[in-house]
Image (cartoon, rainbow, N blue to C red; front, side, top):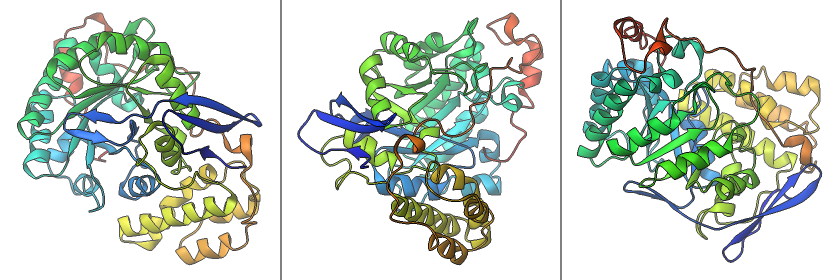
Length: 411
């Protein structure tokens, strides 16, 4: 079965294998402008810790078009020039435009991090993370917990946007709906960010409490689009195919999509997205025919790029192991072979194992579709004591924030 999108005159009709049948969706081709950056397709790769390193970004770019964002970078670690962090912000010469996402809780440190990136010409686009739901982040007031404190959020975004603007770099914000259904923040945060001079806002249409469970509330993206009118609004959540992306844009009116878990083990999704949503030059070539041979080749290319990125074959091969289940989801790859792929230590081992596969096996359809990555379950968000008592930052909250950037992992 051929998976992908047919090329033709605009608007395009996209074809996607869903539930054992071909469905279609009408998607007008369009570009996306974020400040001074014009993208051939309105598509952004979401930052994912341990995933969106240079190797994965290069691989996705080889298939499609759009903006490919780095792993989340901690502002304090960047300002202190932590060695791991400095490596993570390094882009390959083929990466244009260069995009870096920052996570910070202190206005001065965030501004300093932006100024460093601008002064050293390390980025063409900067994104601020206010969407992380991970407990170790939210329990200290960071990530998706931070927009609850309106004054703090305003100061961080305003100072960062001003610093970026001085260097001609567009700055954007990515956030969630809020902490939980009783403490929504996205409409206030969207308006504040717009007034502060950001170039775009992106919304993951879930609360921190939902983590990645259930279904994203696309109606919230539509509401944000109505509230924020002078800059692009991007939608994120439950985009597993180009068909989903086209539906989101049609249903919500958003200006573009941010794709995260949907591309795990499917970097060629960006080709599908570009053909469905972008202009005629966004993703030239034939639609993807994702048979097992094609997937194995993509997996091998990913491993090769990881080896180049880490400058260490063993480390690169250890990193590719976590991608095995995603790449081969639904394909006729036996358990023993999967287990061996998940323990490889060299490119030669990968080549030997690929040679044992039924490489002419066709695309398996619905078995390879749908959710990827861990969804988790709804849970009560971990927050600093008394965090929800006020929308303003009190003394206790300030103390909690002081420890929020001590992790120098870079993401």
